[in-house]
Length: 87
Figure (cartoon, rainbow, N blue to C red):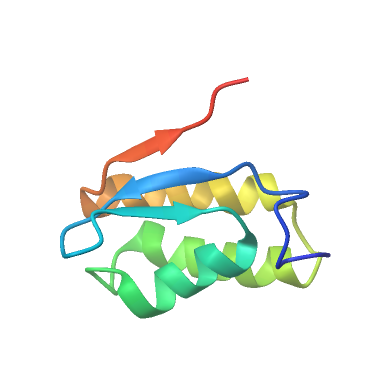
């Protein structure tokens, strides 16, 4: 799994508070970093699922798309708007 590339992860943008209002998540690495370093809550069910999904996708156990979907659900749980790319 190439977790530092956008090859298998469809980018999305999260609208967060703070000086950097928009956070681009273009790779599994970006998703994992955001969840572990910048997430406003750390005890939600969807948050914990997203953490596990990122880890599992990085290890190749699930798809990057599944991890992306888990991140979107965690953002919804935390009240973080998500701008997604539609195909």
